[in-house]
Length: 255
Image 1: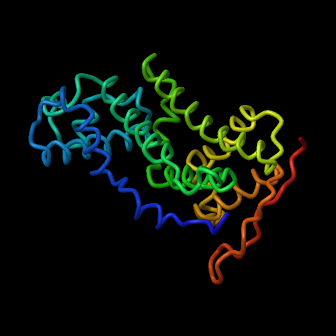
Image 2: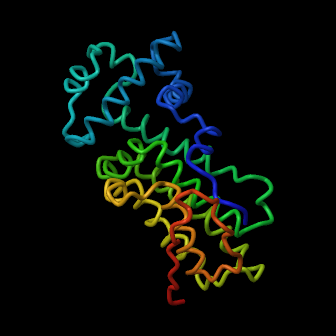
């Protein structure tokens, strides 16, 4: 299946900086955002989103007021209303960008993996972990604030989660059909993999205290999943001198 990539390689391929993400928000909401100068709009959106993510992490989005947002961002209440008409719209802007990034990054596996389900599954697992690392505050916000979502927001979040599971299920089904995996229940297996991916961004502080890098976590998840599904393809030798020399997690799960 080839060697695993690195977070640095992933970031070189995908611009997920705050400015780039807010540029996509501006493009998506151009019809309702009243500020027409892109440079000004993107800079202010970056201040708004960054402050919102920080406040939500500290006190929760539900408890955050627009007055809190004006005080912390340095923007007036009138300036805020040039971008959104209330907290629900702001939440949907942020959630929509999280979902958009998932679709953009995970929805386009490399063409050379089309006939390689084992490689495609490994790519999906690794890429998901690197994506959530690059957009960590965004994904934590989407996970922690799910209870505050409107019906539209819940539907959007569920649709995105099902899309991710479907991509993994397709790789699992393809691999089982080719005799590479042993997967009695494809959909359930894909659903059980998802919490392993979420654990990286929900409990990242725990992993950091243990000195676990995104690359090491990705290798461990891949090894765990491959053992569970009886993958017939090995991972290949780790590069010399890297933390890849540490032992992989390799557990056999009952099937």
